[in-house]
Amino acid sequence: MGNQSDGSQSTRRPMIEAVGLSKFYGPFAAARDVTFQVNEGELVAFLGPNGAGKSTTMKMLTGYLAPSEGTARIAGHDMTADRIAGSRHLGYLPENGPLYPEMTPVAMLDFFAEARGLDARRKKDRIEAVIELCDLSTVAHKPTAKLSKGFKQRVGMAQALLHEPDVLILDEPTAGLDPNQIREVRKTMRKLRETKTILLSTHILQEVEAMADRVVMINEGRKVFDGDVSELRAINADLDHAFHKLTGVA
Ligand SMILES: Nc1ncnc2c1ncn2[C@@H]1O[C@H](COP(=O)(O)OP(=O)(O)OP(=O)(O)O)[C@@H](O)[C@H]1O
Image (cartoon, rainbow, N blue to C red; front, side, top):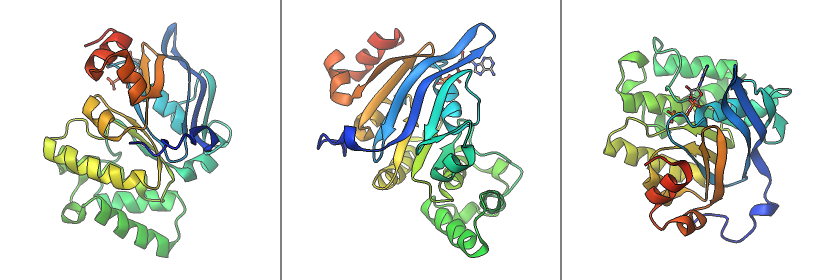
């Protein structure tokens, strides 16, 4: 299924690296010593029950949140010391959809394109391209706050893809969507995985079976599994049961 089936995983370049990442809020550890990597061309599903620390880990990987301990690297760039260089490679879909709900999708994309230093020509081309790819033309000039959840999610995705990053970190891209919208997101994802390295958090185990090369699972801030889907199946043929066994949550 995955594009690592030729056994070349170890020779591929690591594009997303979590090295001993921890985040403490007072005495509470939202993430503790989390280490894993996503190699070039892989799509890795990031699983765990609510509150396990997925979003916290993703925010540290993207440089949005400073780790208490450890190192996050994107395409080899340390996201604390060298965030701008790493961010050129990275598209990030945060858990709560796009920022700046009062702006229209076009205005927001324009703003992000400016912030990322795209020149005028490339800005125009890329905004047009992501509006088409994410099917936003009918809502491009409406305030984002007034859009449906599915469209808001697409605006977030368009923002993440704007600068043609080769690495994507997507925090629950199908959360709260209806089945038709989920199909659309999966279709987009299948297209993206041909050219990009992707870390994707989700609660939908069918999504994992359908798309992931590998699974990283965390529970109570700690990594509890890192392997491919067949290894997860070796724990229990039913992925729901495997998830339950590793996390103690149904
Ligand atoms: N700023 C903060 N201050 C204190 N605790 C926090 C903070 N941010 C997150 N947490 C706690 O850290 C833990 C991990 O949260 P996180 O959002 O990373 O989980 P998650 O795995 O993404 O969950 P979900 O699947 O519900 O999105 C939770 O218990 C959360 O309440």
